[in-house]
Image 1 (tube, rainbow over the protein chains, first blue to last red):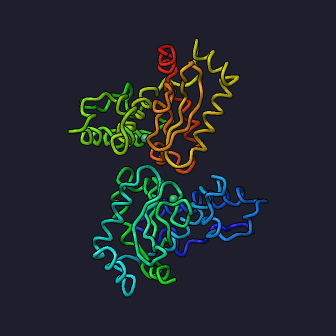
Image 2 (spheres, helix red, strand yellow; image 1 turned 90 degrees about the vertical axis):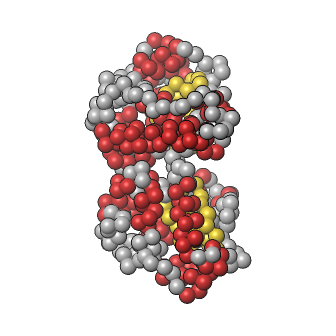
Image 3 (cartoon, rainbow over the protein chains, first blue to last red; image 1 turned 180 degrees about the horizontal axis):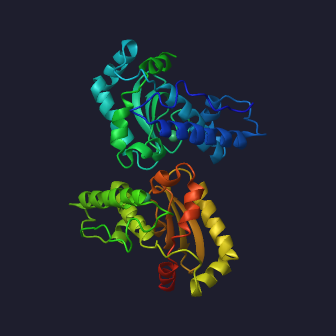
Amino acid sequence: MAFELPKLPYAYDALEPHIDTRTMEIHHSKHHAGYTNNLNAAIAGTDIEEQSIENILANISKQAVAVRNNGGGFFNHDLFWQVMSPKGGGKPSGSLLAAIEKDFGSFDSFKEEFSKAAATRFGSGWAWLVKQSNGKLVVSSTPNQDNPLMDLAEVKGTPILGLDVWEHAYYLKFQNKRPDYISEFWNVINWEEVAKRFQD
Amino acid sequence: MIHELPELPYALNELEPSISQKTLEFHYGKHHQAYVTNLNNLIKGTAFEKAGLEEIVRHSEGGIFNNGAQVYNHTFYFMALSPNGGGEPKGALANAITETFGSFAAFKEEFSKAGATLFGSGWVWLVADSHNKLRIMKKNNAGNPITDGMTPILTMDVWEHAYYLDTQNARPKYIENFWNLVNWKVIEERYDEL
Ligand SMILES: [Fe+2]
Ligand SMILES: [Fe+2]
């Protein structure tokens, strides 16, 4: 069974003016499609061909580097599209908000910590909000296409929010100003989707 | 010492159409400049305050290494580009390339492939080892082959910021254009100094 490029849950121009149409189109139809195709090529004819992506990532240290890079890229971008929405922004509510306040002190201090993790990731990578196995929420960041589901991640757990800070995610609109892109991200976060992942 | 952004031996529009003026305005004017500024701020009050750039690359780590190596790498990259670049090297370097890689075309192909397959951000290098033997190396992020005991001769930036405004996801197109700009005279001099 080959992995398929997931459809975006909204149109390429839906996140304007925060994330521009051209970036979304290239990011999804070229970068994400590339990871998907390369993942399929990397697992074709191997004993993990039929496994779920979560399973593959959980044992990634046993796999070839092409599976790590492209399996990560396939999963991460899928999560990324889903935790954004044209109706996003604002704050979470209910038990997710309560957990954020318990583990970070306040929503604003969480926001600051997450933004800092995204801004200071040197080179290409991701910032994450991670639910650890004991239920505690933490912020982490990973290089390249690694993620917290991977057995080799420094901070392991379930990623419930992720921000792509590869330059391809923002360069056409923001160029060297990664912090401006990070600020815009807060306007499109789909907190309902993040809450769903928190409860699962 | 205070580190400075080097003056480029060409105007920012002169590498067109291979590299656009807009790309250079950001790459040189913003990214390279920011690494210089960050480095100068970070070394204040540290053991590296008076160190030269190569010593910083060799011995530092963390933020000082990242910014110091990025200053070194970008200067090394920009100073070896030219509007009149391209073609093939001559003399001793040409002979060494043929001896190591079989032909200039084979070297170019191997170097280009290294650039296309480096995952994430980084640099591709042509280096000489301690026996002056040539080899190609991929280094992630701010990586620099001096830390492996190698002498760098040629480098190509494959961070996305080096090409995204011009060729977006098509990194191989940027790599193809890069060969039009390589100033082999500078590269030959670096090799002759080994
Ligand atoms: Fe991406
Ligand atoms: Fe660069």
